[in-house]
Each structure stands twice: as C-alpha cells, then as structure tokens.
Length: 312
Image (cartoon, rainbow, N blue to C red):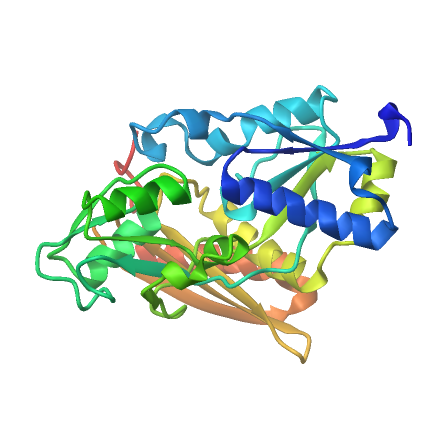
C-alpha cells in the first residue's frame, strides 16, 4: 500500500478519543481485511481540549471539540474524523457529513461518589462536579441542596480531582468508562428514565467529506442501522430546540422490534426547577419527524422565553 493510500483518521488526543479512533480502525480492518498499517491516526488538538478554565457555554459550546478536526477534513489533511456523537453540533460545515454511526454503547450516566455511593447518599450540601448543564440541572432537580460546580477536563483528570477531594462526586458517561475498561469506577449507574442522557450519548460517529467515494464505501460497511435511526431522532429533537452546550437538553430514542421508534425528550432550566418532557412514537422510517415533533412538543409546553437569558 502506497503512502497516498493510507487512510488518515483524525481524532482528539484524550485516552477516550484514542480508544474510539482505535475502535473505528479495528472495525474497518475487520470489514475490509486491511492491515493496521493501512491506517494512520492523526491527533488534533481542539479548542475544547485547551480551554479548561471556563464552562463550554461561555466559550462556544459543542463546536469547540470538532472545529479544528473539521478544518483538517476540509483541507484534506485527514480522510475521516472520529467524534463522540454528543459533541457534534446539529449544523455541520458545508462539504462535510456524518457518514456512519457505530453500534451504540450504554447510554446511561455513571455516578462516581467519594462521600456517598449514590446521589441520595451524598451528605447535605455536598459538592458535585460536572461540566454538563444537563447533568447539573438533573442533579439540582433531584437534590436542590447540593453545590454543583463546573468541572472540566478529560476522564482521568476529573477522577484525579475527585480523588484529591476537590469534589465529593462527579458524573461521567458510562460508555466512555466502558470503552477504557474503567466501568468499575462507577459507584452507581443512573436510571435512564429519571436521568436521561444527552442526545447522541454513547455513540461514536464518523464524519467525512461529501463526495469522497473511497471513504464513503469503506465506512458504509461499519455503519449501524439501529444507532443511526435513534440518533436521527435525537439530533432532530436537538435541532428543533437549537440546542448546544448552552442548554440542558436530554433525549433518548429506542428502536423496537416491530419497526417503531420511541423518543423521550426533555428540557430543563439550569437550576432544575423547571422541566418539560415528551414521548413521541412512530415508524422508524419517520425518525427525523418524530424528533422534530417532540422538540415542538416541549417548546409549546415551555412557552416563549424558556431559553432566554441562560447563557450569553
């Protein structure tokens, strides 16, 4: 295989991001009987990795984890990009598209407690660290007495801060822990109905250039239909709400054996006091419509101005 034939995979440089890129590479190797040296993993530093002293809502939201990688795609420095689907904004740069979703991992959130094994066990006034407005709002809804603070950094740095006693507990995506063989650190796994996930949580997606037939053909072989259907609904829900890291939004779509799909969608105020949720079902072929209608349901219930003034 010549140098020009090597498939260049772009990714962030965290341990989790590299695990996800390695999973994509392994699936492509298996699907096409390719050797490992047919691929090169290119680590790209993103703004979200570098800016750790402020909440994402203050510095640009989801695009902070993808824009430099997308620039590399557009400039033909990489052939495909591997992302956590929950980091993907609903508006994708012209010329690029999500070309595949891999089989979804566990969608639930993991609770890691130092002063209590569950949210209910935490002492009154305990400090919980989370960078997610959704997790912050859901925590405050369940336990208004808790002090919830912004908690940025990769999985390892957050666990180190927890161990050092900077916080009493934190929450992380169980999928990420599982992908790094670290699921054992969770002291509790949160119920998906009471603590619904972020849209796209647990799913790896591949982004590539529109019209790149070689990459489209390679990637099509590892695309997972069930995950694609679920995330089509969840991302449509998010798009209808114009959601980003600036807003507490949860969504979880489930595909059923009878060819139908159900979406549970939720929006909250940052303090957790206000909440609106909906459930919409329909044919899996109407996944995008289901998501958009669910978004309109909660917008109608919330009324005008629900999102106003939360973040600049």
